[in-house]
Image (cartoon, rainbow, N blue to C red; front, side, top):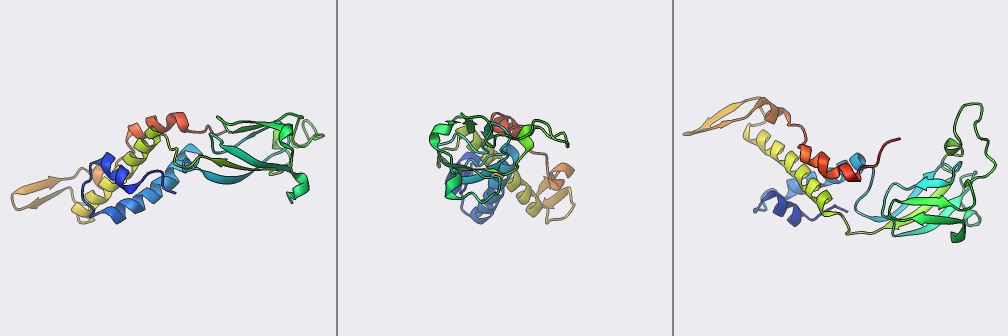
Length: 208
């Protein structure tokens, strides 16, 4: 699901014709993927199934705020049958930050503190916790939508510049009495506008 509608993106970019709707839609598909990877989150919402290590008492979900947790299953054998489902009384969900906290100690108790490999407890039993949960759809923050439109617009301008230059490495063209001048950076592709990074900074999940 796209983070915003084509009509809203065009409104933010000041585009009033439908001549490039197909191009804009393709760029929106790319922008959906870029924002998800850049921020480490899927802003579109929906139902997700994730797998996490079981050596600690906390699970940090990729997407948040969390609307509801459907199931938490813990299984060292990775089968995740019905008998591995934890009761809701055994954990608490911090919905605003997408954290599932065990109320009964580590998800898999009895794991050694520091094994021969020097791994900490939270790195043990990888993918032994399965969490199925949902986040709200249609709840993309307005500033994320603005960054989304700016990204689409940035790529759109690059395509239009390449079209105007005939997809050649020319820096100047004259048509009748009008001259179009392109900087080398415009032709090669300008860096992303800093506004995009600033708007997304509060939503970016730190890499650890």
